[in-house]
Length: 284
Image (cartoon, rainbow, N blue to C red; front, side, top):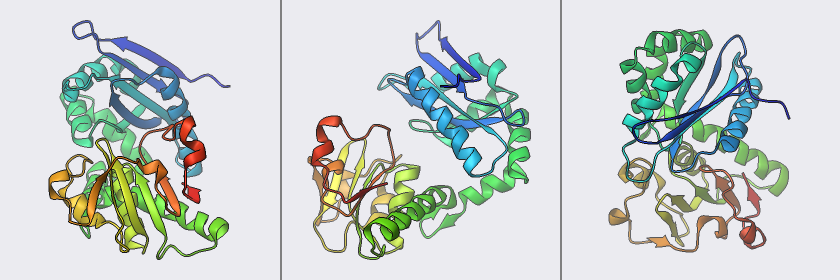
């Protein structure tokens, strides 16, 4: 397997927090990817994710390679200070060639604020505009625009997943999206956007999992996804405001009895001991 262009690990001497950056490949001297914050973000995982970003960029015909970063922030520890110390440490590697965004456990606001505080914004702006063929201000304004209760930045993730689900339904299950039952693992930008897009396309979202567990319904119309999204905070569904027909479910989203299971959060979401118990007819 081809080695990454750069793989670097740094340890904060004050907190002991470890951070890692992998640049899989530079294309036109640029790579792009997200920064993940979690208690464990091993180098092997980041290598695979950075490689996936290279493939994704190539598929989308973007003139850039893939990268991924991770900061091992213990539960209960504030993310932004750890993120700032990490980006300061890896600045010499990432500042001029790597366009880093948010990922699991981080927000675009935090990433952008830290990059501005470190004085890296001019370089980030130049890299972004090289890829986007527009100003970064115009691009961010488009992402922030609201579309029927959710931002374009959220919905663009969902539209891609919706397209993949439609393809599976057409080619494998020979059925329309309308009326299809779906369970979604994740309720952040990708999971939330996916649930919203699929629901708007006529699918019935029967279960959604976030970091606190699963909420589900047996109602024929499915979950009120937009209502749940508006009440959610940082991708976590409010259990205090669940409609009467929606309940917390200990079964787990991967075992939901649905047509399609959408995995839109963490990798390796289905434990090996549960593989034979998955009831979904298709997994996206």
